[in-house]
Image 1 (cartoon, rainbow, N blue to C red):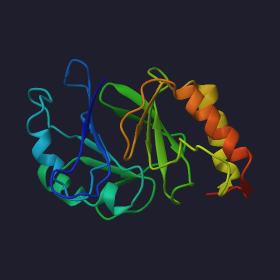
Image 2: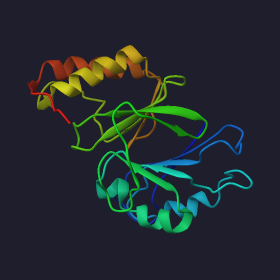
Image 3: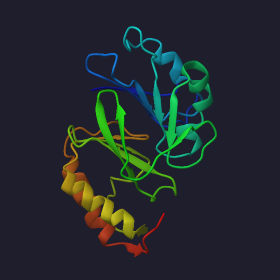
Image 4: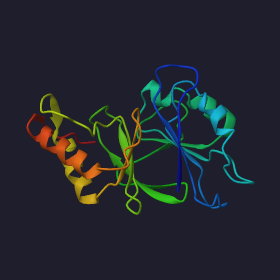
Length: 203
C-alpha cells in the first residue's frame, strides 16, 4: 500500500486527503481517496502521481464525515473521476452508505469501517488489521489532559484500538503519526477515563 498525503493548494482551512494506491498499481487494486478536502484542488495534485496504466486515478472515495473541510471538494472529484462514493451518512454526491464493521478495499488492503460518533454523529475511522494503519478523520486520538465530556462509545473505541495494536495514524489535519501510537492511545484513554463520561450512542 502506498499513501499520498494531499492538501488543498488554494484555501487555508482544509482537511487532509489521502490517496491510497496498491504497491504495484495492479489492475485489481482500488485507487482510493480518504476525504477530499474543501475545494477539490487535490485533483491537480493527483494528476502528477503515477496511479497505474489503464486505471482511473480515483476509483473509490470514502469520507470520514460530512464536515465541509473534509467533504467540500467531492463534486469536483466526482466530475473528474466518477468514483464510487461512500460515507456513513447521507451526503450529497454519496452513492453508498457504509455500516459499522463493514470491510472496504483501499489500494490493495482491506479496511474495516469503525463508527466513532465523538467528533460528529457520522464520523468513522478506517483500520487495516494487516498493516495497523488507521485513518482517523477528526476523531480525537491525542488527548493530553483530563477534562471535557466523552461518550461511553469513545472509551470502548480507545480500548479496542489498544487491543488492535494500531501502528500508524493518518488524521484529518495533523501530520501522520508513525511511531509511538500505542503510547499516544494509552495516554488518551487514561485522560478520557478521568473526564466526564456520558451515555452510549446507539445507531
